[in-house]
Image (cartoon, rainbow, N blue to C red; front, side, top):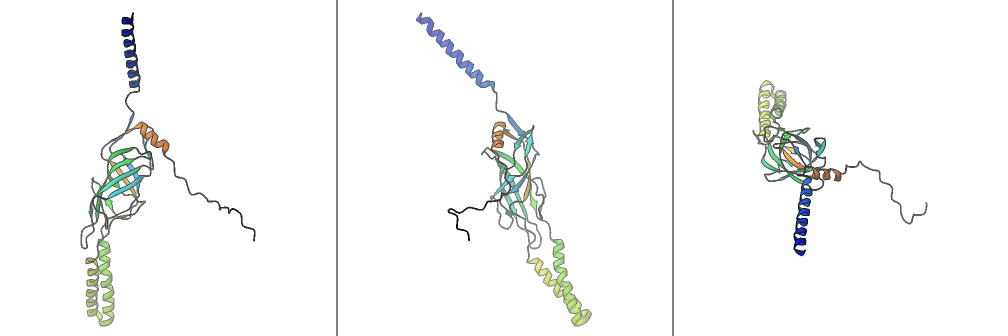
Length: 247
């Protein structure tokens, strides 16, 4: 009898283990969301960028300001942090050569700490006073100063011509314009062109170079933990204890 009981118990335990394994696999693999290549993300700089002081290897820190929705699910909520790095910096020249900066994005950090690598580059810097994207890598180049330089030279030349004409007539006008033009030219030669200066809060648009895959459960957790920013509230006047006697 004992010889029959032991094999029966062994078969029963194996059956339970197989059932448990089957139940664990019923849920299937974790659901994912795929953000396609070419998707754009609007962000704001948390730290400024200036070609006067920036150097390759410096970090770039931003925060998304508009959500990205995939399959009716908020894949990237506003308030997600974005980290990047500066690859190359070029200062503006004194005679020629415009300032340039190249940086790319490396990491998304969701509000709950969920971290994902992101292959992104700069697509646009909307609203910036100076600079535009000039290639697919995302290099940003400062605006030129040709019109400004011409005005710098012409202004002193005209002033010199007027002063010379008043002093010595036509010949004096020629001499005065030459002296004024030389002064303006010297100012141009010793002055650098426009630098790129993007303070904190500047809007930056990123474009994904390759698709990224997100775990839907982790994204949902990030969404549930995201708390919208509250507007300014009026503070009540503090009460003193004990209250002072009336005047």
